[in-house]
Every structure is written in structure tokens, then in C-alpha cells.
Length: 371
Image (cartoon, rainbow, N blue to C red; front, top):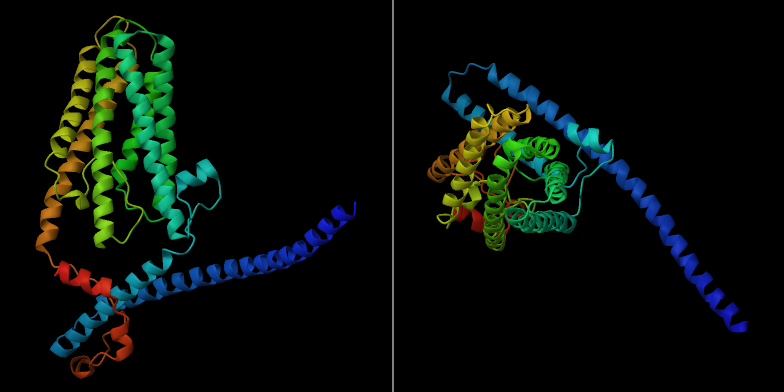
């Protein structure tokens, strides 16, 4: 009993320390929340004032060359200030988009810690890889065996997979991922397609398309696995070299501008997948006239056609865009208020020691590489 009382007294002392730290934590948490709201309001105010200044500048009709130069310098200052505000917002909570508000309500999904962002992205990639491998094994099984229960299980897996992707990708976008709008729309369309496949009644048309669809899924899973391994290697290489600012870049079902180097082996596989989607649409179109064909057949044909055309156009658009970007000089702004309104001061004044220190070694290296 004495030993238990001594342990209780020791635990009580530790609890006092814990209680004090928890009280301090709650206070700091409240202060942090108030500070975040204040900064968000100030950023909104800055953007509103910047918009007013831009509107005023557009109305100016200048003739004097010196005034035109001052206008150019001011435009640069405004552009730099906009970049600085955008940089500030990366560590502030962001409002959810309409889709997340519908699905999750007003729960804020902003991830403010960089390590937590990276871990979330890693979990997203692992989720896609695991589900794709499971889907490939089920598709291979369905190629040799016909069980309606397994078919339904596979279709339900597709519906759940794409629904989950739409939510996860919306969270990624809120936290800075630059995934293109088409690839998000692609997953919404894929969700609808999977839902129609799930409720498609068994019949002559169903079995006429079933084998082809299972082969398509096996091939698609192989392509996505190749793409997953390639993209992860590219992102790791670019991150090590310091070429990317965002840790939220993700794998997608197409080509991205940062995937340019060494992509020769992957592009043919992607285009074959898009042609396969077109072939699925054509096969379903030819089955519309069959006796037991219902509305599922034309609907699926249209959806596969949309996916094929959209994927082909989006992937093809990025290639010339990358070539064009390489021919243009890219600017990286390291000092927002480097230029002043007096042109003579701009020309004669040397950067101060404080301004020089703001340029980090990584920035200098990247500027040289970009130039």
C-alpha cells in the first residue's frame, strides 16, 4: 500500500507538469488561430489593394519614356508582391472547395506541416499502387473464371477506388498540389463509368464486352504501375536536385511537364491505353443494336469515348507546351521590393547587404540553371 501511495504521489507531480503544459498549449493554440485569421484578412486586403492599383495602371496612357519605364518597374513590383502573398498562403489554412464542402462539410483539411504533407502524398501514392495491384489480380482471375459475385466485387472496387481518389485529390489540391483539372474530372467520369458497370444486368451484351474489359483493366494496371515507378523516380530526382518547390506533386494517368526527361518508353504505353479506351467505345457502340442492349451500353460507349479523347488531347498538349517553355526565359523573383519608383535610384543604387543575404544558395543555383 505504501508503495502504491508513493507511485500515486509521483504520478500526481507529473500530472501537475502535464496540466501546466496543456494549459500553455491551449493558450498558444488560441493565439495561433487568432494570428492565422488576422494574417488571412491582411492578405485579402493586400490582394484587394493590388487589384485597385493594377486597374489604375491600365487606365494610364503614358507618352514619356521614363514614365513608361516606371510603369514597367511598378508592374514588376506588383507581380513580386503577388508571388510573396502566394508564398505566405502555403502555410495558412485554405478553404475547402465545393466538392469537399459537400462530402466533408466545413471540416478544414489544410495540412500546414511540410512533413505531414509529404506523408499524406506518400500514403496517396501507396493507396493507388495497392488498389491497382488488387484490381489486376481480380481482373486476371476474371479472364479465366466467370463468377458474377467476383465481377460485382471488382466493379464495386472500381467505384470505391475512384470515389476515394476524388476526395483525396481534392484534399491534395487544397494543400498545394498542381494536378490539372482534367485529371480530376477524369476520375469523376471514371466513377460514373464504374457505377454503370456495377448495375449493368447480365446478358448477351454484358458477356460480349466482359472479356475485353478485363483485358483492358489488366493492361491499364500494368501501365499505371510503370507510370507509378517512373514518376516516383522523377519526383525523387527533381527533389534531390532542387528543381521542384512543391512536395505535393502526384502521379496521374497522363503526361506532366516535369516528366520530360527519359520519357520515351512511357508515352507509347499511354497512347496505347487511350486507343484501347477508344476501342472499348467502338465495341460498345456496335453492341447497341443487340436485342438485350439497354441504356447502359450507349452510356458506357459515350463515357469511354470522352475518356479516350480527353486523355489524348491533354497528354498531347503538354508536350509542345514543354518545348515552348524551354525556349522562354523563366524568372524567379528573390526580392519583392528590389526596385523603387525613382529610376535613377534603381540604376545607381547597389543592393544592400540585407538584400544580398535574402538570396539563398539554392535560389542562386536554380536561377543559373533556369537561365
